[in-house]
Image (tube, helix red, strand yellow):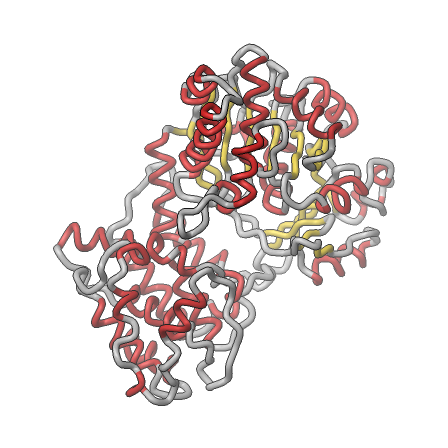
Length: 534
């Protein structure tokens, strides 16, 4: 069985339990190419199984007759090595906790464009798409870095500076490409459009809007566009930037899933690692639970998302749902467990969840957050957090790792823990009653020493602050608690890092005490967690 349009004609797919699209892929692709309604930038794993799956469902249920035009702006090998050889088809594999799977071919990904800077044909095709009056929306999963115009020091990235200086005719970045295409849409009659970030980023619509407006403002100053174009972009009755909340754990493609598909007779399921270190395959593996909440702001109309399980609501509700997930019900639990998982020697996140001490930690952090959580109304915080702890995180068939989750922790602790800390201070004047969150913070600093609980060194996950943090902690030695002489203080006082001064919040000294206990020697981490939470 080959994952191609011709290959789908084989009856073996359904015989082997792999569901095929309930519509004509060829007819849908033809309608989509002629009259596009939906473009997506950033066409990796979560897009194919989640967003593509939503579109498939809408087509199968008769709510739509068109698919998605897929645009890649960063890693063009994804188009060349995954999309084109398989006629833009994807094989979605959902992994359940009991070991069963759901396997289905996604057929709504109707065209793939590699938006290379020097590919005149590709850029011309994008201009054709963006000037079509029927285009309703452009969605994005380009990661938080895709919206960033500056580095940590506030300096404009070199490639962004080139985009600003060269103007719309020769752009490199995803955001500048979109601005140039919006300029084409403006000249085509100031046509309306919705730009929908579906990245797991707080206030993602605002981040996208700010980046678009900043590039457009520089272009106006340099004479590449007029003030009328900026007015067009600022007018949400014409160009809208809805806020969204998205959640679905979609790890890298698993070798075990590849082997399972191969054993069924599916050919060409090799996992690809591109030069830009994208891990991708013709299949995508992911958990079953998924959530997408979208602000209903679509000046040119939209698909019937609500018919496919998407929550459509106002901005305040999106923000409440996002805050619930990011500051209480999921992300803080990940950030509490991942550094400890690394220190305790685990390489599978599901195994971390089966650890007795980690069970104590995750429940304590969850309980502390639930006391101050804001209920968004459309989702139950208690049901959400119960699903994470009891269903999602322990799933042994999701090939996720604490090492992956620990990436860029310094960029996240201020939101994932800081919001709850500030809420306690706001309500009672102090966060001193907290135990789990200070212990999680102490565990992160213990992790940064790069020595596990048995005394063996390990490699830290990538983080932009690793160098600074490790330099500051360099004099601390596991097994010699006397080597701790207050090295954490500058970080615990850092309001940028944690969102507040943790000493003023009432937990700075507690973090220090827990950290000191965890560096007492081999086995001290596990012993400290057991003593503090047991």
